[in-house]
Every structure is written in C-alpha cells, then in structure tokens.
Length: 262
Image 1 (cartoon, rainbow, N blue to C red):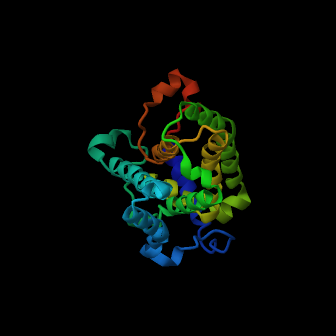
Image 2: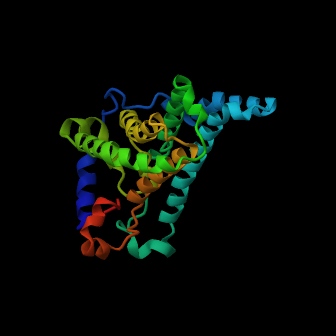
Image 3: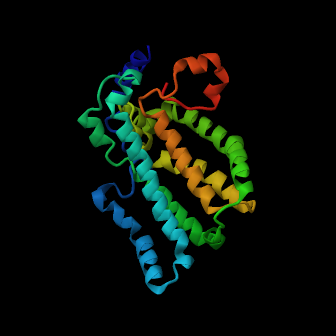
C-alpha cells in the first residue's frame, strides 16, 4: 500500500518538473559554482587560520564551531546514507525495495546546499549579535528551554509550513522538487529549493536564538540541537523502517513523538 501510494505520487510529480525553475527563489545563488561553492567558506577558514597563527583562537572560536558543525552535520547525513545502502542489515525493513537510480543521485548531488546556507546565516548572526560568539560550553537550563521553544513554536511552524508547501500553488512551484525523488534517501532531506531552506533556517534558528536571548544558550546546545535535528531528518528519509510498526500500533501516542519514513 505504501509503495502504491509512493509510486502514484511520483507519477503525478513528473508532470510538475519542466519549466518550474522560473519561480522566485527556486534556484540556489551558487548553483553555477559547482564544487567551487565550498570556497564560500573561505573567509571563515581564513579567520580561523589567522587566529591560530596569532594565538587568538578564542576570539574566533565561533568561526571554528561553524566549520566543525558543517563537517559533523555532513557526516551524519553520510553515515545515514551508508546505513540505508547496507542491504545486509536492512533488506527486510526497507519500504521501497527499488534501488536509488543514478538520475536521482545526480539530482540530489548538491544536497548539502542547505548546510552552506545555514553556516552563512550563522556567520552573519554572529556579526550582528557579537554576544553569540561568547557562549559558555554548557548551561543545564538551556536544554529544557530549547525543547520548550521547539515544541511550542518550531514544531507547529514546521508543520504548518509543510502544509502550505503542499498547497497546489506552492507545490507546483517549489515542493515538487523534494518529491521528485522516487526512492527515499537521507540526502533527499536536503534536496529542496532555496526558498524552502530559507524557511527551514527560521524553523531551526528559533529555538537556538530564543534560548540564547533568554540567557541559557551554550555551545553544547548548538551542537546537540542541530545534530539531533539532522539525525531525525535523515531517519525520516532513510527508506528504512527503524522502528517496528507494531510499536506504534500498541502505543499510538509515539507517532507524535517519533518521525519515521512511513
């Protein structure tokens, strides 16, 4: 039944693909740079290297954290990608038994664009609010505050934005790209338009910024929240049912707490 619905959606979405890149904020600003897009990290790398050379890395620690976060978040996606391809581990729990086609691999090649976008956004926020560069390593109240803001604001906002993107007008202009992938894959989580990831920047940024402005922000909070968010995004797009379905049959409330591919 799941495969039937998915194949039906794919067939419907194919008709949306041509001539849809004309929508405002559909394409990425660095789309034509290819692999040279990573040069956008040049200023951050230069600041870190210069700070290390001068022995003042503490003054530019936030730049180092932005670069480390980019690397760790990319690693999370890569590890999930590797796991989803390990048929000897998950063959019996795959939702779609079809393999990922080369066409989809090529289409999702620039899945990490959103990581670059969020790194740039973080850099500009640190320039606008210098206090963000002086966060403590740990604040025990921060986790609780972040969870409250996430559940109270970000989660409902993410839900309603997703509903909006599935409206006929928005879907035909933007969200069809995300659904053009025939087989779910962790990289599919990042395969979306520039506009959609701008909105996701807001969703992800609200809990971290709100917690920081409340006075409970920390470096560990920034790492744990973003890595956990990416982990769950990959889980939801992994095409592997990690949690057995009978768990949700016995405890229906869990479907509101755990996001799965089905």
